Image (cartoon, rainbow, N blue to C red; front, top):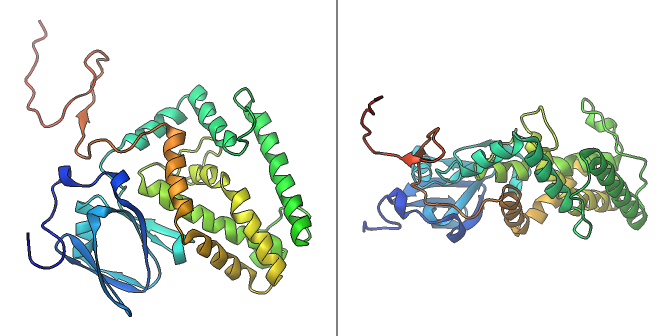
Length: 314
């Protein structure tokens, strides 16, 4: 082992399983360098060494400077890196997926490409919002109607509890400031939820564009996924902030309230669990797993890294 913090660069087979890693680490206003197999984080409070093999996703917030050598280490260690706003309230860009496996992406593509399985996943998303009801026999049209009724009830309930007037969801995408305070708060809160959802989806290697309910947009699945959590997060926080501050810098205050809600990491953990549940994917397989596809169902996948010989056509 080298002197200093960390160890020599790990081999791929030595990398920790996702379930064994600390899930998400958020950093802001810091300088990030590399020392052996740890990232060296420096800010006004001092220096901390973080072993990258123990982290799943690194969220880089405002004011972060990161060196090329540090990024090289993160890539070698299978660490997903996402550039975000304060505490994940914006998603600007992301690096590699969490691991080398394309299992989640392949499963998503397979499920969304078949009408029956696509509807099944969509029903699971709605079932998560109606835990005490059976929606397995409902059509997509019935599900949309049921969800619309549920959300309207949530709006009315929160309006009565907070005293914030509610006349429907209305906003102009080209003129944010002309909206009512509650509608501006909802827009700001939902944007933060989309950002966090994007961070999770991208970090785990799924596709933001392969939606099951929404379609035709590069963020279709983000809208699908975020909608699961709106009634418990963005909607109540929007009414709370509007009741407290009215139109006084409501967008910023709402984003900050969402940020504070994200701090404990419980929603991030829940999102990871829910994403795997939707796609029926277990914990990561061997990180070195790779196969060659074969069109023979009996033979199945073939070993990677083997020198194959020509087969006679006799």
